[in-house]
Length: 128
Length: 283
Length: 134
Image 1 (cartoon, one colour):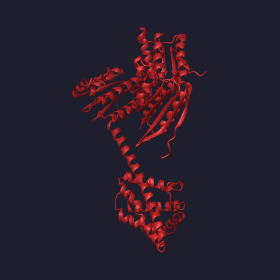
Image 2: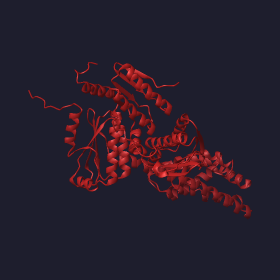
Image 3: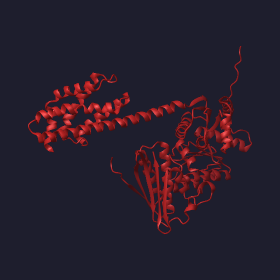
Image 4: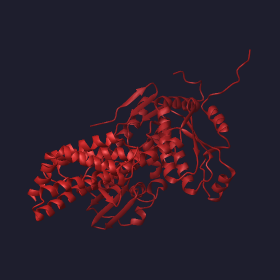
């Protein structure tokens, strides 16, 4: 079965969502991510949606779910690369992605994750 | 009908040089405009007549495939007239002044056959009118495209997006904002944020005299979209009147940061992006 | 002007929702819509196509480029012969943001398109027609 690959980078999980994701693929991704977080003890999830040319209510809900579920599993999520047209459409659609942290690109997303993890752990800043 | 088709085609073909020089004198009399030189006009007439001759051999229905080269040439001619600022009437005259020379030759050819003469004259009239109509339509389409493009350019010029510093861009908005303009501006601002990688966008409305509910909503939608994308937004330059309007209309700014001046907004943006400007030590 | 043509895309599975999106994208491009309008159209199509699969038990999407005087637009009609929508008012409530409504994405699609028409009869299916103008 077709699945979206999840890459592991240290204690981060990186997902790049391709275009034209059908609903089943989205459900599988949600399941895969949560089980991977648990299996690897990952503390951060970065979802790259720069290739997505649309985010509808189903995909939006999936993103919000992943963010919420990860938090429960003690991992932070950042979604990066949202296209302008997609952002405008989401606002028009009235989709509320509150609770989902976003960043412009992968680099900034990583930076954001690292600073959030450092803040969350109260330990010495991580030496990545 | 087959007869008159061939007759007109024959007239154009057999008498082309004379026909052309007659047409040119009609044109010289009708069109005296410095926007197009006499030489250019004559070149266009010659080229068009050549194309007409070839196409007319296949009949006088200008909507057919055989007439494609003529239509394309008329598109080019109308477009250049539109860009130069000619009127549609002036452009049509280019075609209609071909009637008299054609009628002259038809009369000469069919002087002894009044019925055929009438038929042929009618066929020529229909034919030239069709060409004229096509030219006018092409002209109008080009004119509309020119106007649309000019509007776009004006829009772009009136709201430039400026990079203030690393990761900080500013959009000074000037003049009254209407719904359409605000939407266009919003789209280009978002795209620039992605292109430049700006973490903070400052929208300065010092130069905006009034803001209505619709525009305020668009601005708020812009801010929401910017945040969705992972950047943030500061609105600066809100005049007292606009502040009053916002409160009167009950518009909820939803936690959007506002600053009185662009300078204040820049200071905040620098702070938030972890940058600082310090005074240089003078030796 | 070439005669307007209505294309029909069958929508039975989740994969067909993707096909419907792509078809809508292609037509939107053809009609000359800018990227933002395209995205709105395709997102609305995605919502409505999903409804056809999930609630309509399968159906079709009919698409055509339309003209109304001087303006051009894209019209999409989503037709199914499923159970129909019993409480239309509820269905058109903001399902997503407030947690109420049936989350049918109808209200979302309505917001993204200029014209929105819905005909539904319990037991006789549903037809949603949306249009976006340039």
